[in-house]
Image (tube, rainbow, N blue to C red; front, side, top):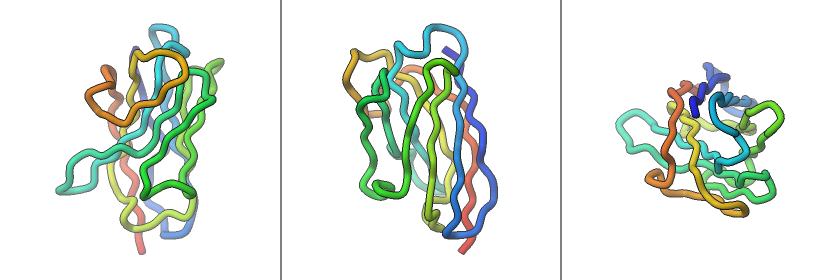
Length: 125
């Protein structure tokens, strides 16, 4: 599966932004999808994950309540709605796909076999 992330940009603190990740190739609904981010000088970290059907989601503590992950299997796309952005959300955001069973999500980067290119989100305070 090939992944293409988009939607990043330069925004002010407090506003919202929605990232998209379009998948092509094998059946999108076969994959658990995740978003990760890497801030300058830091390691890449988990942000959110969504199960294959979209019925289960998981979030990092730092974004819970502000970010929402969703997916549209008919459009082969996963989204990350980011609200009330903070300067510390500044990072390159990556989408990833994991071939896992139904009903699960995943936080570990090693669970994901497919990665898109990053889309940069810069939040000015």
